[in-house]
Image 1: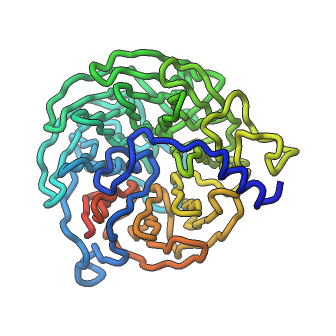
Image 2 (image 1 turned 120 degrees about the vertical axis):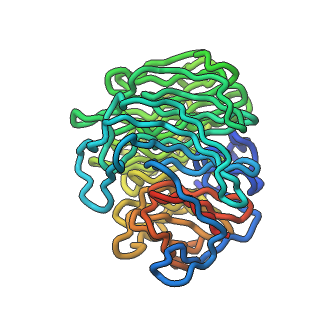
Length: 454
């Protein structure tokens, strides 16, 4: 099928969806990667250049900075005038973290007593409003030397703030920090090469339901709980479906169905939010699935990497059954559920972003790839800079793509088909967490600080 015909077919047949978190007005960023997990916040001008590293010259563009205790890769979540983070604070010493290349599959020497903490900051000033210790004790599972014991971001819906620390439990607070309920789901040891690599899947909320993914290789499952009291409504085993995964589930709502899409290997699967019934599945490619599925253009975008393949799949929400593309049918002409796909070009750690007509993917080797989001045509593949390593997910606003790097630099790229780095901004510390955007302000969490760029 030629690109023009495919494009016309897409325009007349794509289902328009209201995302699980409603429309994005550029104000709140209530979950990991913002409304609909899409990573986009338009409607306000957003800064391109700044300097948050005093060693690199005068501070410029920084509204405020706040010290953050402990160690965590959780991303900022913004609701109203509050910013929420999680962290793990070691009772003794400083938690070790491997920064830079050479992150071999080793566990960190960080198994002493920890406090798993939810933090709340004032959005305007960075002042800490409250902190609550969700759990205290020795970790039930080890973590990777580049990970932390608190990788997940909170999810907020209405007055409920959900923090899921994997083996250390699911905890629900109100906006003022009062605990309303908690659930202990046992040890969730996301393991590979015989060691735990750490838990990283944030909870997903739709109306009065919470979806969680616990892909411990010994007992992988997806479950849906009541947001009111944490009661488990259903649980489905993922044995023989997924050996391990770290991605956050994506809830997609459209007329006639609301589904939970879960990245995985060897299978990516969509479940009925109401019952746990399987809607569709697609064979995965990367054997360490980390990126979160998301919606754009009324379609569901999924990628993963590591191993022999790094696929990208663009799926119609109304799909049914096994929709895996055929190796013999590179153009998916016989597969009406997959708009386009490729076995090479996906991202390993970073969730991509669709902005305008283009799909952007960041990679740990510093390469930024751009595809036409509707046809799959590759537009460019360019390196951001020496030492760049994109582990955090991409976000977009005001005609710009923001790529936070492990090397402590945020690369700002002009949106569109031409590769142009608008700015390289120093943050003074590595950036593993995905930034948030609210009312034109960028919120970055480095390894030690929360920084507002206005």
